[in-house]
Length: 75
Image 1 (cartoon, helix red, strand yellow):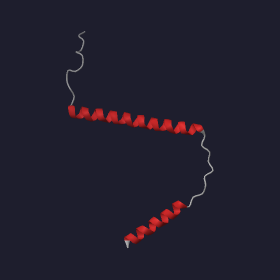
Image 2 (cartoon, rainbow, N blue to C red):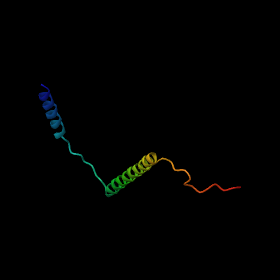
Image 3 (spheres, rainbow, N blue to C red):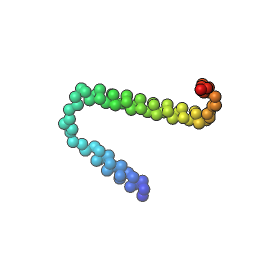
């Protein structure tokens, strides 16, 4: 019963996706560079987020060290 229903849904979905109308669209040469710069920007943002998360995770396991900075100046 469930298999028959799943097959019917799959057939209707495949039939609906196979009926398409032509898209009369024009993509100018700047579209490719825009998409490329967007992909590079997303990759840089993801890399920065992973780097920040990684340093926080490593800092959590290592703990804070005392005395790593320069000594306070006497005034």
